Length: 478
Image 1 (cartoon, rainbow, N blue to C red):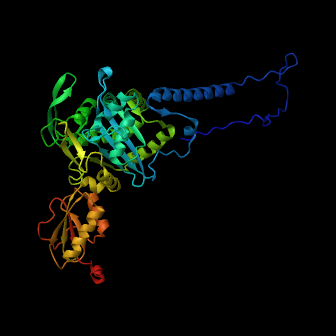
Image 2: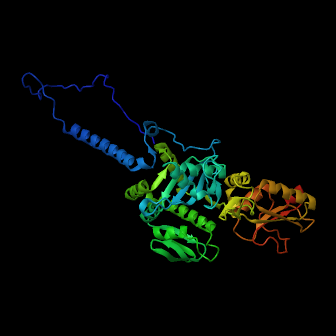
C-alpha cells in the first residue's frame, strides 16, 4: 500500500496575483480586509472531511483488529513492495490453521482440526496438510511428555494463558519439519457466521453418508448428506466438516473428516475471493467484525495484508491451484504413521519410526510440496519392458523410485521385446498431473496408448512402456 503526500513548503515565497486596478478594494480604518472566498472554504471543508473519514476508517480498523494481532505502523503503511514472511530459502510461506470449539461458558476444548497451509512462490500453488488430532507428539519442547497433538493448545493455555498456540506451533513444526510464519485459530462460531455472510459455500459431496451420532446442542442428532454438488449454509457446512461417525463409504474416519474440512476451506476461500464478496464493502466489514470476535492470529501488519491480497488475486484469476493431503496411515504406501495401543491402553497414531522420530515424515512433506500434483493423485504405476531390456528396465524403475519415493511404482517385467520408444499413458482421466510429471521425467515419446498394445494392462492407473531408443530414421517417420 503506497500513500503519497504532497506538502507545501512554507518557506517558499507566496505567489500573488497582480491586480490591474484597486477600484474594488474597500478600506476600513486604513486596512484592506481579506476577500471572502467561498470556493476555498468549501475545498478546505472537503479535504478535512476526507482526512477525517480516512482517520476514522484507520481507527475503526485498528479497534476491530487490535485483539487479533493487527499491527499498524508508519513503516507498514508506507511500504512499497510488501511481502509475507517466508521460509529461509524464500520459497514458501507456511500458515498454521486451527479450528476450535470453545462453546458457551468459555470451556477450553481440544483443537478439532489442525492444518498446515503452504504457499509456493515459484509455482503459485497452495498445499494443505491435515495432521490427525490423535497423533502422539511431545507437548512442549524437550518436555519428554507425549500426548495427542490436539491437546497441545489446551496444555499450553493451562500452563500460562496465551501460550497455547505457541505450544501447538512448536509441536507442528517438529512433526512437519516446516517453519511456521503465521497462525490463525478460528472458533466454529466465526466459521458458521462467515459462511452465512458470503451466502453459503458450494460443495461437491463425493460420497453419501449418514451420521447417527453427531454432537448437536441438545445431544446426539442424525445428519445426512447425499452425493452431488450443493450449496451449504454455515450450520450445514460445519456439520459436513465435523462429522466423524458415519458408517458408509469410509466417511466415518478422522481422515475422511480432515479431507472434508479442507474441501470446505477451499470453497469458503473461493466465495470470499469472488467478485460478489469483494465488491460488497458491508459484507467485507461484517466478515472482519465476525473474525475479530472469534479468531486469534499471529501479529501481522498492513504489509502482510497487501501481500496476501496480491496472492489472493492469483487465486481469483485462476492462475493458482490447491492440493490437499492428510497424514494418515495410508499416506505414502503405509510407510509413515500407524495406529497403536499405548502402554496406558489409549489409542493413538504414532510415527512408524517411533515416538518423536519424524525423519520420513519430513522427507514425505518435502516431496508433496515440490510435486503436489502427482502425490495427490497417487496413481498405481505399472512399468513394462517393451524393448529396452529386462535389466535396463529394472534399473530405470529403481531410479524412478528414488526420484518419486512414496509412490506405488511396480515393475511387471517384459511385455514386448522389440518395440521402440517410451510411452506414458492412462486409461482414465484421473491422473493429468502424474502423466505430465512422468512424461517429462522420462522424456516420453508417446503420451497415448500405442496401437501395438492389445493386452489389457495398467487398468485404472498409469502405464509406462520402456522401449528401445528410437533411431533417427524412425523419428523421421513418426
